[in-house]
Amino acid sequence: MIIRENYLKKIRQFYESDLVKVITGIRRCGKSVILNQVIDEIKQKSDNIIYLNFERVTNLINISNYQELINYINSHKKEGKCYIFLDEIQEIDHWEIAIKDLRLDNNSIFITGSNSKLLSNEILTQLSGRFVNFRVRPFVYLEIEEYLNQLNKKIDVNEYLIWGGFPGRFLYDSKDAQINYLTDLQNTIIYNDIVKRYKIKKEILFKKIVNFILQSNSRIISIRNIYKYITNEYGSVSINTVLKYFEYLKQAYIIDEIPQYSNKTKKELAYYYKIYDADVCFNSLYVLNNRYDLDHNLENIVYNELIYRGFNLKVFNNNNKEIDFYATKDGKEYFIQVSYSIVNEKTYNREFEAFKNIDNLSQKIIITTDEIDYSTSCIRHISLKDFLKMESL
Image (cartoon, rainbow, N blue to C red; front, side, top):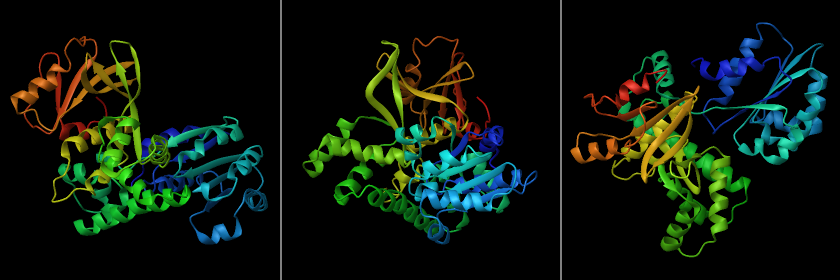
């Protein structure tokens, strides 16, 4: 497995800190691998290390609540600073009470979890703000290339646009095996985890809403839009139910949302957000007859890559013309459009027109799959293949 330095360099600064290091993200994105890479680094200077993985039944049999966890740690730690690693901590009842107690005893604590309830207001109160959070995501393109080099394999960019970057799928050679892996993963994440965790009784309705949301990636959407669609297609449902199910997907890191920013009002627009899937496979798994949604998957891929590189993102409403990303980092502004192709003159004009009246002090970029360079004096065109291999804009 590759060393995921992009995450390690952020966590490394807090190895000795008494802040609780919280590593979160969707299932099977590589949290446990990163946790083990942190352990390997700390082993270079200390053997006072305790690691527990609560996906292992044997650990849960012996430790099922916060008091048993405290007792186990205190009976196994050595003198001096102890480095404690707790994988999938949400499986322990009232785990936050144990963490609050243990962090006061010269311990450096690292925890992982697949549910953003790890950072709910109730738990924030318990930890008194004494934590730092690191969100891990599936592989981006450069990580896939590095990993596949180790496996003596190669990847095609179009294949990435369809099936995304969950690390586990690259262990399988055939496309059918990869799709089976991703389907099982999706069922586990969406249906087993969420339906069981929240005791959802209207399971069929939940699945229909989930299907609609995951196929709406890279689109402006509102809870009312989802409500109207489901009501028209499938009958009565309360808007509160739709909102609740939408929040469940966010809490499990299955979808992200970014706000829309208006240059007229100079503020974010309430209620309307653009949503992105954690991985484009969640869209592609619903596709029939290989009619993959490459336009929206491409924008979703660009979103994932920009987030990985540390950009803060908003959708930009430029006098009712949408610019896909208003990206900021290190005091610099970038306006970024994404289109599968601008070979067609009508598409070309539409995409470039979106930048109208944006001053030239900010970079204006359009990303497409086209190999021909369509850059102008004011707007930079970047091919997808070049963008995916860039470490900086």
